Amino acid sequence: MSTANPVLHAALLGNPNCGKTALFNRLTGSRQKVANYAGVTVERKEGQLQLPSGRSLRLLDLPGAYSLTATSPDEAVTRDVVMGARSDEARPDLLICVVDATNLRLHLRFVLELARLGLPMLVSLNMMDAAQKRGIRIDREKLQSLLGMPVVETIAVRKDGAAGLLAALDGQWPPAPQALPADADLHEAVQGLLNAAVSVPRRTAEIDDALDRWTLHPVIGMLILAAVMFLMFQAVFSWAGPFQDGIEAAVAASGTLVGDLLPDGMLKSLLVDGVIAGVGSVLVFLPQILLLFLFILCLEESGYLPRAAFLLDRLMLASGLSGRAFIPLLSSFACAIPGIMATRSIQHPRDRLLTIMVAPLMTCSARLPVYALLIGAFVPDRTVLGVFGLQGLVLFGLYMAGIVTALAVAWVVKRFGSGHADVALLMELPSWRLPNWRDIGIGLMERASIFLKRVGGIILALSVLLWFLASFPAPPADWHGTAIEYSFAGHIGRAMQVIFAPVGFNWQICVALIPGLAAREVAVSGLATVYAIGSTADAEAALAPLIASQWSLGTALALMAWYIYAPQCLSTLAVMRRETGSWRPVGIALVYLFGLAWLAAFIANRIGILLS
Image 1: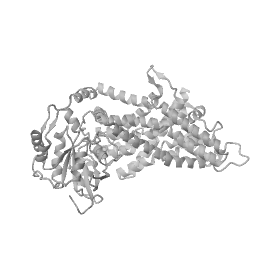
Image 2: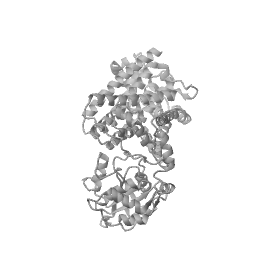
Image 3: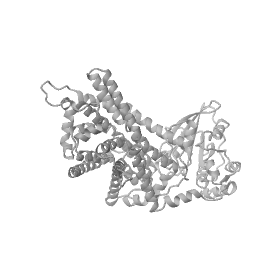
Image 4: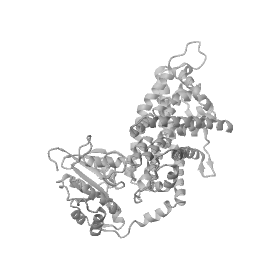
């Protein structure tokens, strides 16, 4: 242990699926997302830990890695940090290698490889509760003696599950372990450790085998996956309704209260039409977004997502994508930014670039307010076949349209491009487990916090800006139209109609598309602001009835189609530039995505006209 530096420096590392990030959350109180699949932690995370003795510890959560022989960018980050090869990161004073007690055959190999680095080490024997349930018996003291480093038992999901690790960190740190010779066979060494210190009565738990027989079946497994996804989209509409009604009523009451307290004038218009109408129109969709994330987090925690990746591997390979692209693309349903960053787990550069290019086609949560508004206004709330909600079916179809298009784009690139390499999907299947509700709660609070910060930050600012553009300049006395048509927003919207009139967009939609480039959901608040100011109806009326009475079905379908494809998120484009190191992929993405968006909107508008 270094005594010169009062702030000690330790690093958590281990194979994916070992519970490393859950342990990091337990130790530091960090609100980092916990996921039960490989590839989610693509950058190192830092936290501060106050030890019982009062000493401070700086703890790094490094990306999951199977070996120091890096085969992907995320493994390279771990390798460079522990070997002291990064100029922006000091080499750790202590390595804490987290291993899954139920899968030591795989995880101990990495421990032996790390021992060759010559750094002080200790092993966190995690998931001991799961190992005991399976009848796995581990002689901790024997394993500690054979490894030549401290071995402590941890259960990251329990409140006191890291007490042994904390005690070890607060004591005298161990010296560097005696490493195996460079020419030693690590697999043989691991087998020797298992024979001496571990008793495994059965290879996997019986419940895992039983569940995998169904979920990994090529036919039944696909039906289960489709049913799970379908249930998720049905729930987004049916379960969120009461919560949305409550928020909508609170927003309406706020608008009425403020409107009654203030005299007519600019301040009243700013607060009622700009702030409350703009922000409230987006806030009402928070329950639907949290429900979507609840499903995704439960699927992550349970261990189902890697199994879904294996099921879809053949389909993705046929389309030109790597099987490893499944998890980054699934992450993009929450937000394309972490999805694009998660492509660092994809080994082949061409496959990684293609995954980055199609990730914006996945329907992120920011699109959900737009979809929910349009579906609620134009799709009847009725059941199909007496079971399925029509609104949920339409939402499911919008999500599927993005997925099918991504596969089609990948197939075209594979068919006419070059440099593709079919790489077999090798991924560890974690054990099935019940979701840990503490981690689920952390994930939902994190998502709600991000959404509310956007509502209180960028969405509020853009709503006020749009109110200004829609309110000024005031029309002259001889103006015969509405005041908003004379405003800056009116002029901008009519100028953009030259491009968007063929797809059925009116000038109000054109205005809302501009702030939507900063955040897609701002388009809803933009529409609310424009219609609250310019509508001849009650300014406090809900947005959905207003657009339902003034838009055609073709316009609504066109806007839905536009949002499937349009890359209206500047942050996503910036991350795409950072991850690829070039503006060329960004330019290609802009051209093909905006082209698809305009063409799809044009076709959808014509279909809507025919249906009308």
